[in-house]
Length: 98
Image (cartoon, rainbow, N blue to C red):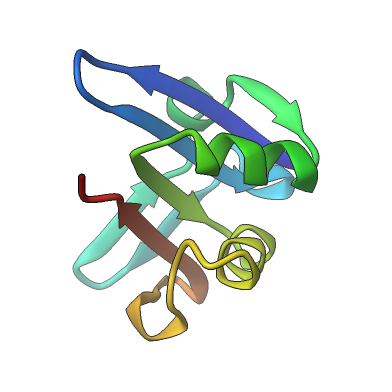
C-alpha cells in the first residue's frame, strides 16, 4: 500500500507517493534531509493498481520508498539510474513533457 496525495495547478497534476510504512519518518544523510510528512504525502492510502492509475494521470511524480520506486520502474515511469538514496531509502521524480 502507498500513501498518495495529488496536487493540481493550472497546468500540472503532481502526485506524491510513498511507501505506507514511511509516512512521518525523517531521513537524514549528509546534505540530503527529508521528512516524509503526512501533509505532503498523506492524502489517501491506495493500492498499486490505483497508484499506477494516478501516475498515468499525473504530469509530475514525487516518489519515495522501495516499493514505490519498484512499482514506478516496473511500469515505465522512472529509470533506476535516476534514483537517489536518502538515508538508504530510494527517491525519484518524474516529469512528463508535453
